Image (cartoon, rainbow over all chains, first blue to last red; front, side, top):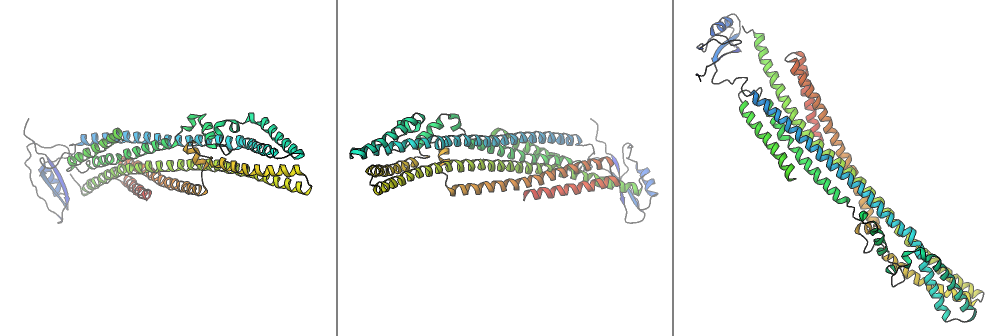
Amino acid sequence: MGARVPRIVPRIDFAATPRRRYIDAVTAPEPSRGSQMSGEILEAAASEVEGIVVSEVIVGDHEPSPERGRGGVAVLLTVAAVVAAVIGFRAAIISSSASDSWQSALRTEVKRSASATEDVRYLYQTELPLAFQIIQARIVQGEMLAAAQGQTGAAKQGLLIEAGIQAQIISGISSSSDLATKPEYALTSGGLDLGQRLADLRAEQPAMVALDPDGLEAAGDKLANKAEVLSLALIPTSVAAFLGVLSQPFRRRRVLLLRLGTVALAGGAAMALIVEVLA
Amino acid sequence: MISPDSAAELRAEKRFDLVAAILIGAIAVLAALLAVIQIGASQAATRADLEAARLASDLSARISASQMATDSSFGAQQTAIVLGLESVARQLAGLENNDATSTAVGAAQQSAYQKLTAALTATSETSGGAPVDLYTAGLLGATTQQLLTELAEQNHQVDVAAAASTHEQRAVLGLSLLALAGVLTGLAAVLREGRGGRISLTAACAMAAFAGAMAAWALI
């Protein structure tokens, strides 16, 4: 390729003195076009304008082209926008999953408590009053029969009649009460093993006993934490966009800003990937 | 030919571009920051809301179950006490009327009352005992102190949800202001350096500053 061609661009400044002009350099190998003017033209123009200093400087090796790195800026901003969109989308999806888990935990909690409360209600409000009646009748009957052993005459007869009444009550309602009639629920004191009976009632629906809202809530917490950490990756990504945008007006620092922006973007993307894979 | 006006315009345009670029970058960073705050606050509000609802459900179940067990125990004891009272009344009536049968029946009932009380006490002691699962046992065995502690936690979760919701609203307000700032910056870029463009850019700067303030407020 040929030798680099220095370009001549105008530099315009207000002068401290009312009228002053000079030419730094006019040695351009070929005339420039458009806004770039030759030294002769500038000199002529400057001589006609008060308070303006016009100088020509050869900046081909120092002043970066306005076009230089523009493609990089566009690529950085586009990639940063895409990465930010992907991260935001994933964070929103994961956050939504966390909310779903928490909602499931609440529904499961309601289902579990309703199931347990229903079993408790059935035992304590439906079965137990009847079972108490049977226990009471049994005990009274036993005491009447025991007392009748030591009595004679009308007293014995009365006690036996009373025991008979209790026997009638027992035979009338015993068939309706598993709690009072099944031996596995009988205590030696004459009472009932409510713990065993409730456990058996609960075991009739094992799926309800296995419900675990705490596990669902913990899963939701884990997902929420993942979404939060993932969303943090938006910050380096946005910093990359910031540096990319800044590189547009700061031409001299454009390459440096673009490199820093690329590093920030890579950091944000790497952070998102690590969270996605490991968390 | 470069006139003083043209020179000033070139400088102003460069400054305009610089401000616009910085503003766009700041909007990007603030948007990310507000999005992070909004996601975190939204999740905290949702979780606390649902946790409060869970605790309310659990409290309701605990109150209901423990109350049923307590009521049942009290009801049985009342039945036993009535039997005891009846036994005393029969014995008194037998003595007053010289009726040996009533006296004997009353005495037998008195003995039954004592055995029934012992049986009921033993029955109550098994309430919520093994092999009942821990959750159901917890419902039955809930004490007033436990319920009050859980109630305080439920109220705390409601407060946490309200506070997080406020933070989320501030973050959303900040994002809305940022959107407005973005639109105004775009408008300024279309109008370029000029009165309209400068006004749009200034307004965009103000909106972005408000959004920044919202982000700071949402973090508090």
